[in-house]
Length: 283
Ligand code: ATP
Ligand code: ZN
Image 1 (cartoon, rainbow, N blue to C red):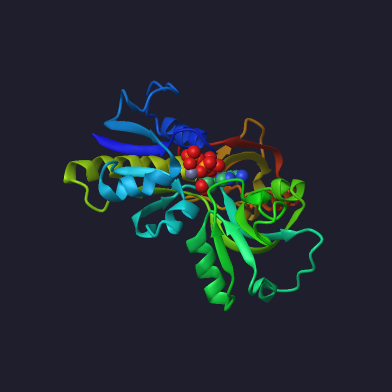
Image 2 (cartoon, rainbow, N blue to C red; image 1 turned 30 degrees about the horizontal axis):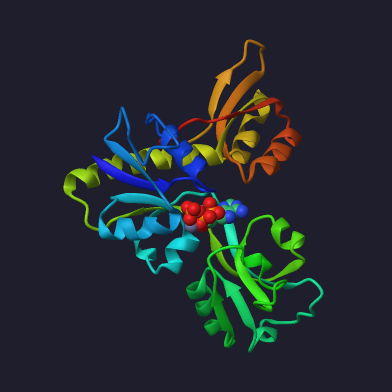
């Protein structure tokens, strides 16, 4: 039985649980419970505060966990990382009051900066040769300038709307973060085996999230040209249509290149293009 620690309630919780479900693992979830055992996979889920997850995994209380890189690196436990998970993307940024003039990072020399991430901030400032007083506070960092606690803040940003509503502007990006899977370095062979099975499923789910299955009709004399434009795992599938001179081409495209490819194959003569999601992808 492998124990995974995930955030009890917060910005990582839902996507962490979704990922486990998409791996085909079932469990009964009650927000009141501290842990739950999965019914069809040797996994037990512990629900914890995100800040506690790296420590519990490092100490072996939990075997693996899902946490933001911001918390992991702040706590100096980056080496526990096993896999990036691609969700809960955010950044740690420096912000100052909107009306302040800001030309460069050196404007922060000698200033007071409030943050919940003193280690990440210090590493960034040191690398830039800036000396500032770091005030560590645990929450509501964005109000620090308006109550006179600090001249600048360093906090998590995703859309930036919280900064704007507090009269602040983002001036420097300190750290980029996403959710990661972490694991204790000292797992028994049995637990390592379960982790490997889980990782295999996670990777299949991750690949599928980025990929789309594409089907299109092509005049037979354009198959070659269109095939060249379509990336695929091996080569595109070509099936004859009931109509003479036409074929159906099937392939897999990456979400990032998707629109560009569609434009090109359309220009090359593709018709009836269908794009469908992929649930799992094993290569
Ligand atoms: P806890 O009570 O568990 O300590 P918390 O208040 O510290 O929760 P949350 O605000 O739920 O934490 O954020 C958890 C993690 O989600 C952060 O550490 C970060 O990695 C990520 N995150 C934070 N804000 C955002 C955001 N706006 N968009 C996407 N991800 C975010
Ligand atoms: Zn937290």
